[in-house]
Image (cartoon, rainbow, N blue to C red; front, side, top):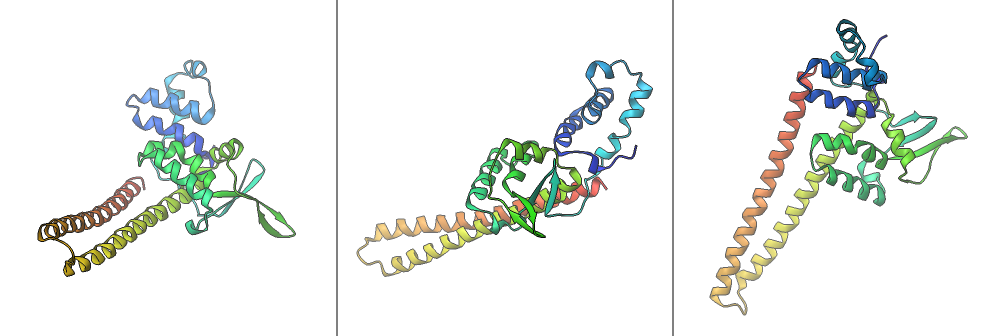
Length: 246
């Protein structure tokens, strides 16, 4: 049987990630067969090592590669059509709030990101159907059924979609932070103009205010540098990881 990422669901992939932390090769092979072929643990224990290795070797090399696929907007899963919103600015307020909540729970931890990925994907899609040769979207909603459908998405669909969305999200957060520091600098400039006049302020108060403003300006600059370094570091790590798996 030919194996590829189209045969691995998001749920299976999340479970397979546990094998990455297993040092014992036999434990890893047993885990892979449990996940990918649905075999019971007791049944696997009766298989001799040669057959165990042969069966597991169909899947293990795949885990050492990066999932590939084309970025697509629509998908049919379990007989239901979904459209994913690829433009962050087109998310509804409810979707934005839900995405932020799940990303906050993940806290930048890669394992937790995959744990919450079904929730994140469910937050950036809407059910859709074709009527009179035109697609008509339903209103956004969260439900256990939609989340379960997201778990059954094939990885050749999920990976390019999630990578695209999370990259865009990182850039958006960076731009929002830059915008925030930009507004902070505008506020600082306004205060500095007031301090220059010094109307009604004692020399000691003026000195204290200027010291405070200098400290805020320094922190704003450090924040911008930190954001730039963080974004650059994440991009570099992602590229190194992808180059190693190719």
